[in-house]
Length: 321
Image (cartoon, rainbow, N blue to C red; front, side):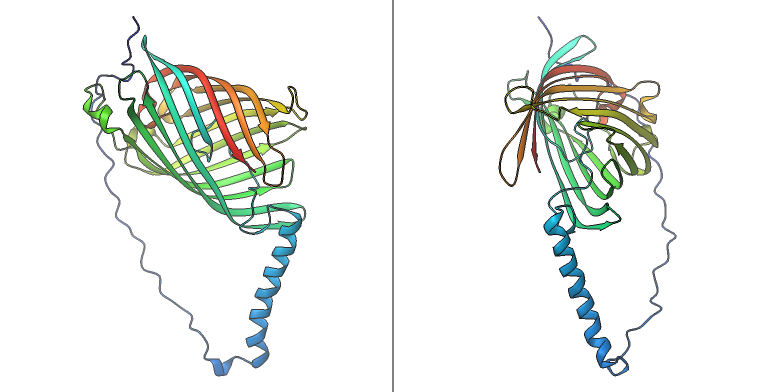
């Protein structure tokens, strides 16, 4: 009989936390003052509102022809990476999880939102600034109460750029992770660690031909409550979506991603996703991807990054574009 306690582990030794740094930044001192109304000429009083109105009209005109441009555009210039954890992806999956010979059924749910505040277009390239929020949770479906194991929260401020074939995205990213109450009370939980950090990351992607997307990213942790995670990390990967349907209205999709960080030492995470992507008709289009997936390497959930495991199963991805 297969055991269902792959999350149980011997508590590692407690690492000393990094001492808090004292801020040396002095309060900003205003060096300019508003001019009194009497000093502003009458034409200037009307020029500023007129310029603002012209900018809004120009943004609206561009947005009518390009959904990535203007205030609150409907499409991001750079799409999220489906196989990477810290992304605005909507996913529901069920997998057979294996670690050190123990197995369990793992339920995984993820909700993400990429909200763009404004987009500019110049010389055929689009630049955007927005907000990304995402959360993911894992459940041990082999227990009677489907214990919540871990929840990760991600928040980022992205700046995106794309000219069609090439794209780039820079972010200030925050992650915090929390073990589930039922898991903590089960007696199988490891020593709790306060995994919380802020990082800067940069991702560059390229579309050499229709359906193909190649990407590489690098990140650097600038502040952390846990020294074990190190500072440097990165990912490389490829996404392929068949330009033409292969089964009715469904397109074939395959994604491969490899991630490594300083915390993994010589190990790396590898994830493969492959299946069918169904796209709706109409103005606001939805997509549903039904895929098989496999993973091996350091566990990509919360504080378990220093433990290796593998899983395989079925995954659903939900998109709106």
